[in-house]
Image (cartoon, rainbow, N blue to C red; front, side, top):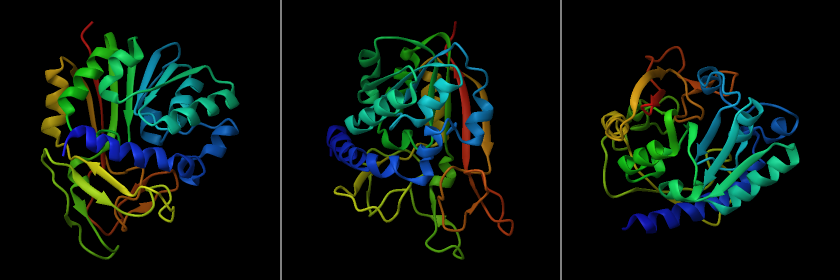
Length: 272
């Protein structure tokens, strides 16, 4: 199957979940409308002072985090391939009276679609799993950054993403590739990560695993310098049934299980 066919399948899914996600309590849309900030604790702490910085949020979905970054003082642009998501983001920006630009484009076409370069590229939580070619993505990131600009990437840990669990009392077992693969993993299930009971017209997605050797290697090959790398014992969604909500929008392993890395973050800089 070609990458174009996979993108078409994923686009149908992402277009179809926008309304569900806008109305999901997981996304804190109402809190945002009341002036809140929707960044999760890890990126909120690590992103630093972004006042006056130009920032592009790649694969921004319907723009809640993009607009929260604008509230922190950045001049923001969000990019997403789903027209329904971009329309929802533009509507939220207008409602909140926030100056933000949203562009509809496949992330691989971001250089031409954006027509600009930025101080910061922001990519978080479940973005790269949808991309078949991470080296191409890294080259795009490098091209949309100004000299001296930085990528902030926060994602599920590749090792954690390779494990699965059916019930909370079950052991964690390998159920997903760790190393990169050409053919996509096909997922066909009802609901979404933000609303498991949602009835969707399109239920199938295509996804790809990316090990650390590929993530770091792609960024280095694109000419970016890794200047920060962290592993975290929490993640923004309930990856396995045994994970417990920590009260601050994150999930962790229960205390009776061995600790494992659940997510990672890094900062990579383009040479000045």
